[in-house]
Amino acid sequence: MQALAALQSHPWAYPALEVVHIAGIALLLGNLVALEVRVFGGAAALPVPALARLSLTLALAGFALAAASGLLMFASQPGELLAKRSFLLKMALLALAGCNAAWFHGRGALARLDRLARLQMLVSSGLWLAAIVCGRWIAYE
Image 1 (tube, rainbow, N blue to C red):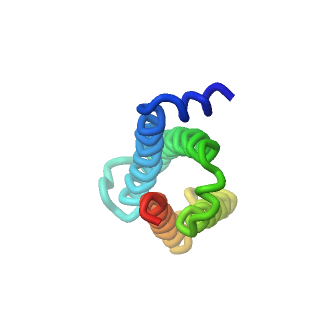
Image 2 (image 1 turned 90 degrees about the vertical axis):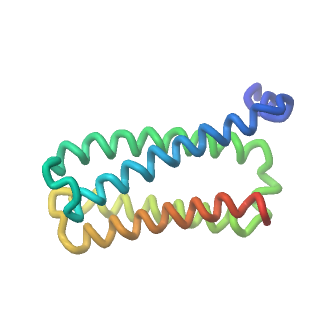
């Protein structure tokens, strides 16, 4: 695999991949928080449906960047990462965030914006923040 060989042979490749990973996380979480702020009453002049379309599109692009870069980083050192509890916890948190998102969209929560939808949004942000903390902790374990 050529990408994997490049990661292992070029001293700047892995740090560059980390930058892509962080940019993806910023796009993802930043747009989810922007939508959450609107749902909780901030920027009331912005219509929720239009902001949701924009925010969720950018959040998905961020997730795609983070997932693709994360998979490449994992492929470069799978044994080492699988031995770290912080990595395993990060993966569990990502799975929970995915289940929460599927439930949120599956129940049409954006159209309802009821108490449960708001709770799910808060849980989502909390899960993503916890996953970021675990991701940073990997380097220190």
